[in-house]
Amino acid sequence: MWELTIYFKIMKHNLFIYTVWGDITGLIGKLKRVAEVLKEDESVEMGNDFEKYVVNLFDNKYFSIVQWSTDIMRKHDRFVESDTGPDLIVRYLPKDEVFCVECKFRSSLFEGKLHWSNPQQLKRYQGFAREKKLPFFVVIGFGGDSSYPERMFCISLKEAKYPALYPSIFEKFERKPEKSFFWKNGILN
Image: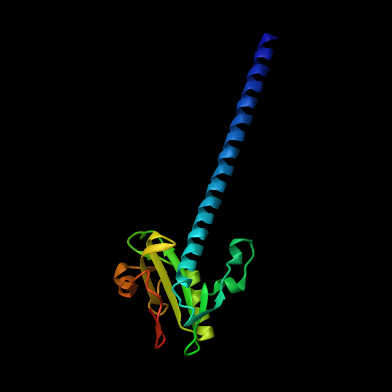
């Protein structure tokens, strides 16, 4: 009889340990998900800060913002067609010329390359530019803070042919990060 009592005590103890362990692993899983959301929120915030920085480099006397993407897809688990286009559609007022700008901020290179997009995004941008017949530029902030990057590059989508670029490509398009944008003959710099 005492063996049975000991057996039940051991089983009760094991059940307690199993329950506590289950609670701990569940809590760890929840903490991981919270950390992922916080990291994503930080990434979104950095992207938004950089977009604002870029917009402020377009002088109101010469440029108007025709469209500024809201990226609603980030907030909802639903595909939104308008979010597949560029961050900005801008009009150069003196000549009424319209062009697209995609803003990307990156802290560092990965495997020696600047990963500014993914293959699906790049195809969507190329399709958008082709369909709308608009010049399309990728403005990349690199290093420093997203609200004031150390370096900046303004690359035509025709030159940014790949989702990841080597320095030998993107460094040709470097510009001063604090310099206002200028539009001339279909080129943004």
